[in-house]
Length: 195
Image 1 (cartoon, one colour):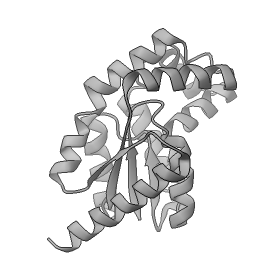
Image 2 (cartoon, rainbow, N blue to C red):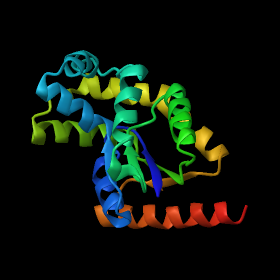
Image 3 (cartoon, rainbow, N blue to C red):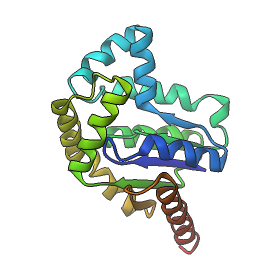
Image 4 (cartoon, one colour):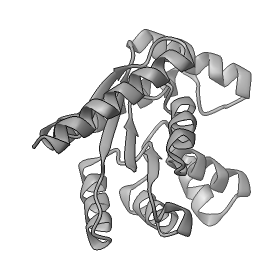
């Protein structure tokens, strides 16, 4: 199973990624976690990444693509993966298509978690307090949501056109949302089989 989990910051992607990955026995790969680990370790890439993250900007495609390609080349991804937070731009979609095409595999489904903007802002500010994350100030949060709407949300149309997109309400308990996701994945799979 090769899955993409999309949605605005604060929609619950990280929480749901762990649940879905465990259900299918595949690794959950979060670009945000990769970025934060590099920042914490003060790697060369981490120092560069930190300047973008602190401003609420996307990390450049070439940097992100290289990190994702490296991660997907590891043995635990041979039978599937769940990508959380990638792709975010049309260029990243093209890079992922090329990477998977080289391996003669493709994406099985794309789950889009949706939630209302003010609820997302509330969630992200609460998370910042709980986790001491200084990259989640209100101005940075709103900037990230604006960037998502402008750059990433249109990717949903691309995947919908391929018949891979399942939109899911991201509000509710973790278990409720997980059940909605699993139901949506079954529906996408059935639709693809009936083509």
